[in-house]
Structure formats: C-alpha cells, structure tokens
Amino acid sequence: MLVECYDEKGAEVYDIIIKQIFQDLVLGTAVDDLKAYVNPDDPVFVLAIKMRKTSNAITFEEVANLSYVKADDITRIIIDDENYLPNILKQLWKRFSRDEIYQPNRYQLELTGNHLDLKTLVIDDPHSNLQRRIYDAIFRILPEGFKIIKDMSTEDIVAVVATDELIKDAWIEKANEYIDELSNGK
Image 1 (cartoon, one colour):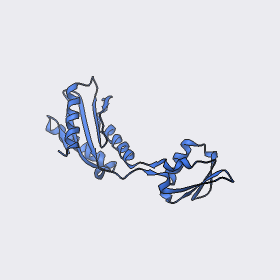
Image 2: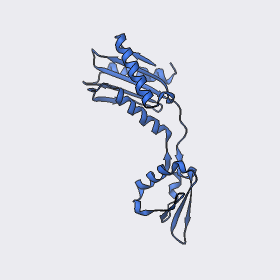
Image 3: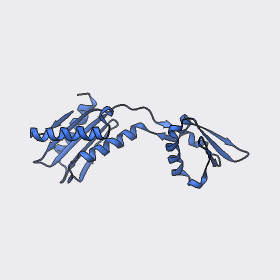
Image 4: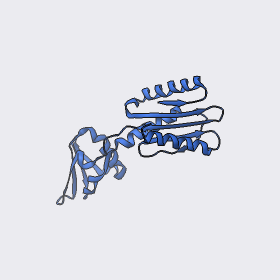
C-alpha cells in the first residue's frame, strides 16, 4: 500500500484511515494492492485499488433444478443449495410479483408457465459484490467535500479521481499511472 503525499503526517493519517476502513469492511484479504495520491494544496484525491481474483458468477442451474411440467403448466424449482435461496428469491422478485411465486416448502418454488430460461440467470456474482464493497470503502475514504468524481475503473482495478473543483489532466494521468502499475504488479 502506498499513500503518496508531500506531507508525511498527512500520508500517515490517510494510511491509518484507509487501514481502519478496510478493517471495518473486512476488505483486507480481498485487495491485492492500493495506491493513493493526496494533495491538500491542489485539492485532489486519487485512489486505485487492485482487487483479488474472485470465483465465477453462480447461475440458477448451478444451485437449483428447474423442470417444466407441461400438464400443469408449472415450472418447478428445487433448491439444491439453501445458501442461495435469498439470492434466488431476490432475482425472481425482480422478474415476477411475489404473488406469482408459490413456495410450498423451504426447498421448492413454483411459477406458472414455462420459465426454463431462468437456468442461465446469474444468482450471485462475487466479482460485482466485491467491487460494490470496494466502492463503499472508497466513498468512506474520500474527503467529505470532494463531490466531483471521475471513475476510471477497469476489470480488476477500482480507480477514482476526486476533487471539489474541475478535474485536471495531470490527475487523470496520475490515476492512469497507478492503474498501469497495479496491472503490472508494481
């Protein structure tokens, strides 16, 4: 982790703030590296965080069995992994009203009609979940008045430039430099 600032005490304070927020949000093991640039004279905060690799997205068919009973015109869903039931229900509630989902028991759901197309629906995406948690950390780390934010994130690196005035090209270059360094393991 690198916090770059001309003021050593300021860098130490931000180092402590970042570590504390990462500890509070239990992000320490989910992040490979972090680079931050702070300049109080030129109100800017550049932050780039390299995420660790996550497992692949989980689809409906990986955690449940779907079958269509033509005679009853019902799609039956048998839950194989109960840990994903909240995610399954959340995804179904986005597509159907709660009245359309019948749950005769804890491990079974039923929908009227043929809904076998749900097999490929993503139920859980660890990469997106981690990215969301890192953005939460970033917004806690950024100085309060810095409302102008440019998101420069890539696939595995979450990077932002934040300020309370117009974003300068030099700051974008600094963020790109950090992104390149993190991408190449520097």
